Length: 104
Image (cartoon, rainbow, N blue to C red; front, top):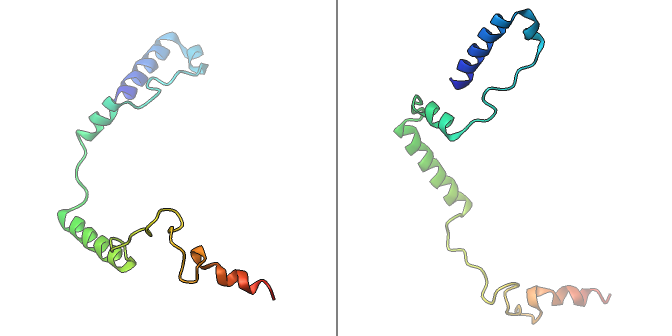
C-alpha cells in the first residue's frame, strides 16, 4: 500500500513536470519489506487449512515415523566415540578379521 501511494504521488509529480521527467529512473519508494508491512498484510490473511486436514497430516506423519523407526529406543553405544569397548574378537569396531585377511 505504501509503495502504491508513493508511486501515485511520483506519477503526479512527473505529470506536473512534463514529459522530460519521464526518462529518469526513479528510486524504489519502499526498498525493503519491514515487520510493519508483514503485520499489515497478515491483518487480512485467512486460514487455508482445515482442522480435519491438520489431523490427517498428523496421523500420516506419525505413521510414517513409526514405519521408518523414528522415535524408537535408539541409544548411542556406551563409552563415547567409537563405542569405547572392543568387539567380541578383541579389535575395536570388528577390524581384526579384516587385518588377518590382508596377509594372504
